Image 1 (cartoon, rainbow, N blue to C red):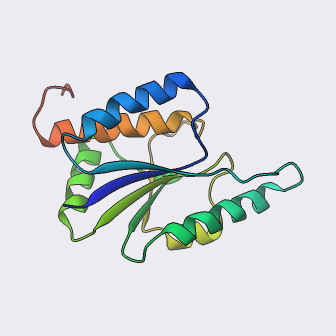
Image 2: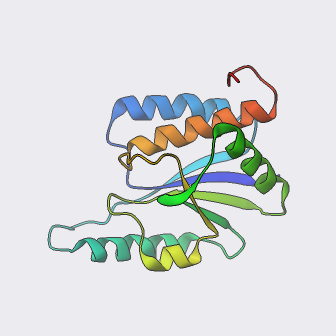
Image 3: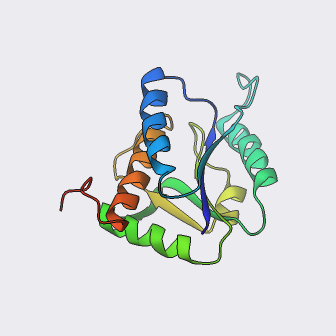
Amino acid sequence: MAKVELWLIGKTNFKYLDEGIAIYQKRLQHYLKFEMKVIPDIKNTKNLAQHQIKNKEGQKLLEKFNIEDFVILLDESGKSYSSLEFATFIEKKIQLSYKKIVFVIGGAYGFDEAVYKRANGKLSLSNMTFSHQMIRLLFVEQLYRAMTILNNEPYHHR
């Protein structure tokens, strides 16, 4: 079975988000190998333009991806799914021969073009825009929900 990872640019700045993330991260361990990885923020960004920050973050990400990783960017222009459709999507990806499925939440300005080119897909959790901090909690909850749907457990009400 594939390992699922969530990569984040920078630490979560709010304790309430960390607490919520920890709840779902612990629950997910029952269903799959799941890990979160924090890619450190770029230092000394005051004099950098947004595209320069995205480029530097992108370089850090690209250095860490393995060739065999299946990379999905959480991006507002990505494909949207209902919770049931997302569960099916996850099930299919886990069953394929990928060693690792990597979901990536970019920094405040999104992703560099080189990261878009490397990615295997894009996922949008909503038509609304959320902070890159908040989306972390929303994603781990949806991943947990998908796992309970796949296991016919009562968390998701149909």
